[in-house]
Image (tube, rainbow, N blue to C red; front, top):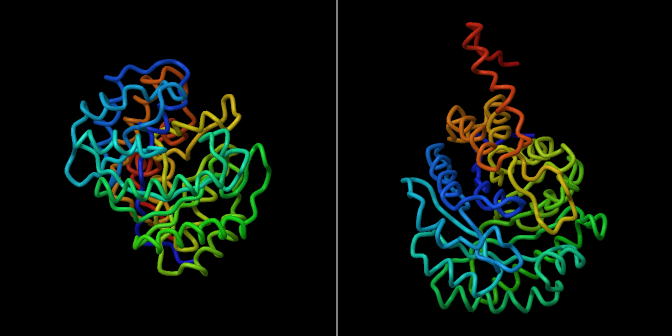
Length: 323
């Protein structure tokens, strides 16, 4: 139950948020969102996704978005790609911090819907991806399992199954001389609860004590922050989130469910329990409200409406009481 002193937050709003929007978002507005988030002092912002415009038309302007935003010192600007062609497009921009990841989906049904590949096909593609990393000089330090806690199409996902997938990815990495530093567990469709978080995180920590764990959490059923706290209590110090709760997966089978945990809500939680993030919460709240204007509809973030407690403490002339 030892909370980390500080956590790392990867801001995904510009990528994960834009991919699910039904109405087209102007390229200039996507660029503006990235630039505003750059003012919040994130260690990483995920800018866009290099995928087929046939399947995800919202990402058809990926190169234009990358060309337009302004890099800020101290922030890494990353992206998503699903194959070697996407990797090449990302590298060719010459502006992104392209990172290598070996990833697989724990659900056979969702793997086919989301990537049009079976799990077996994914491992074949992973070999090609590693060849791409070598060809383009991309460093690969992460393995990732999507739908690691459950799937709307397949149901609950067993922790031992996920560990087995990670073990196979780690073996592939070792065969190619890759040094894996981070293991990502993604709750892609919001199936996790604090107990399942503790169960799977505990198994991964026991099996790979030297690797850090990243959690990619969705707040689909309102458990996102509870799951983040449960993970922090186990020492997890690396999280994905999206400003104002932007995002979600277009192939998860939802109509209007919330996507990622809202970054400002996560930062506020950390601020209240004494965990540092390095993120400028005041500026982030302004960006969260502006994100609603950009997408043209309400977003599920809470602190951007309720305000963070330190602002009320200042008005009341009090300070935070420590138990």
